[in-house]
Amino acid sequence: MAYIALYRAYRPQKFSEVVGQEHIIKTLQNAIKMNKVAHAYLFCGPRGTGKTTFAKILAKAMNCEHGPTVEPCCECEMCKGIAKGIISDVVEIDAASNNGADDIRALRDTVNFMPAQGKYKIYIIDEVHMLSNAAFNALLKTLEEPPKHVIFILATTEPYKLPPTILSRCQRFDFQSISIDDILKRLNVVKDSEGIKIEDEALYQIAVSAEGGMRDALSLLDQAVSYSVNDVISLDDVLSISGNTSYNKIIELLDACIGEDETKAIIILDKILKEGKEVPRLINDIILFLRDLLLYKNNTILEEKIMYKNDNFISLAHKLSKNTIYSWLDILNETLNNSKFSVQKRAFLELAILKMNDNKLNEEASLLDRVVSLERNFEMLSRQMLERPQEIIKNINPNLPTKEELNKLKEDNYRQPQKEENIVKADIEVTKEVQKDIKVEERKEDILRNIEPAYEEETKTEPLNDEITISDIEKIIYNSEPEKKEALMVKWNKIAETYTSFLELQMMVCGKIAAISKKKIIVILNDVSFCNRVMQYQNYLKIMEIFHENDIDVDDYICLPVVVWRDIMSEYKAKRTPDNPKPELSPRHIGVKRRIEPTNNIEYKKEKAVEEELKELFPENEIKIVEE
Image (cartoon, rainbow, N blue to C red; front, side, top):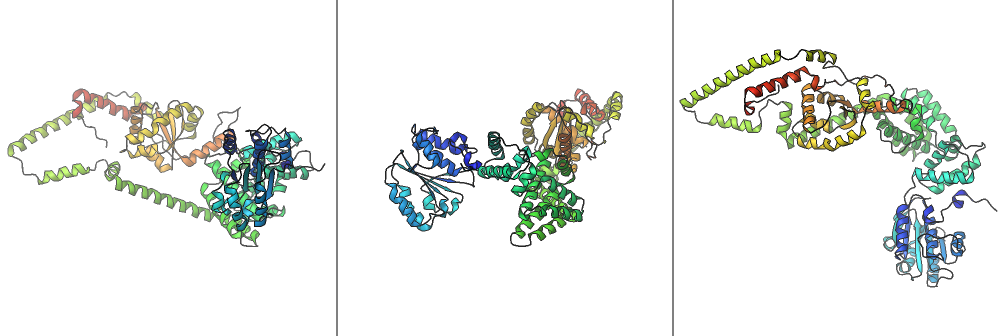
């Protein structure tokens, strides 16, 4: 018997064997169960996603000797006959070769005949978009009102080419590209059944190269088995037949671009092209690699990839900035578009590699990004000034009078002169106020002298203006409590709504909680300047006070720029192992000032002590504390 290709030998025979189209399976099974099967279906989607396979399974489910049933038995004569293609009641037509009006008229003449063997006549028209306009017109009436024993199933990869009159007469199902995980599961089943030995990286590369098509994946596996001369199919074998480029070679090429070694980069490119790689395919592989690199740097890993554990990949991720990656992507996209209309595709790619070696362009791209960011921030601030100018001005200089205070001063200037007795009375009140201030100042000096000197010693152990170090961050990361982080996130957004007038708090709450230990949190913001502004001494004390008012059980916080945090986490994930859950991180310059804990702060304790004494001397409603 002739060899049967893997994609034919392992074609699904039941709904339960189909991979990646659960929404369509559920809908069709419910329709069969409720006896609401439509007279015409349109299956559309990418190649190799199961459209024709679905049509044959539906034909078996409707004509099964135990049916109509939600799952064909595949044991009765009807099911076996449909699988072999020998049942006359299931007619499969290739519209690419039978696309004329006469072919459709011949089909229409047979529609009225009753089924010879089964319960339904099923017409499967594959690649239906290839029919001519005359053929579509000939099919319209029959498709709209076929006999009760007839079901039409139309399959196409290009539904936009079908006339609206055909689309409106069918129930449409859109088949999705099959995910890499689902393809891998199916490939593992086939591999085990056939006894094929293949490396995990090679099998993963087959799933990626299939681009969402199960038929393509099985065909590539079939081809790899024939190509490989070794006992185990390797990654190089799969790359040779698929035309893709190894990510190790792409890393080598990009490393040369980072070092501005143009000669080395061109030599590496020449070696890759001599292996038979196509220029557009190579450009596409580099673009996808940079996309994965960017997601890795942003800690947005959509799926675990083998290359994420590669030391060379991790090293490259630390070397490359995001602005450089964006610049390279622009260069490669432009090259890909230009090469489509040229016979000198290699020349375009070589010029692109030379551009990627020019770091001046990368610096210009970085400066441009910074200018765009500044413009965006300026626009946001301008909008805030228009919406709530008094709050913004008050945050910039708290001593400026508000609009209400200015109006009151204006009214006082236009008011008539007061009587002499009222002026004398006001002078007496002013004198009393001055005497009260003198007493308060004298009392304040006594209180300050009585403050315990132990506080000064505590402040010396942790100076106010020291910068945050990697050891500060390690303490929080190693003792992180994910449950406490989830509880804090519930209160985080409510704080911003309550304290709208405190700009520094708004900036902090707009950041992201990165980690939280028993008493400390790490908040990541856009850049160093924002971090230092939020960590300013007065802002620090005010924010901690707000935290305590909202029952947030933390004694300290530190702010980090998002770029620094991502680099730290990349290194932490790379070094962390089951045997070493708390790896030592490399020291680095962070640039953010540290603030001491409020309970250890002498100035904070002095101010609180003074406040308590003042409350004992005077009624609370007569005390007004103004921050300098």
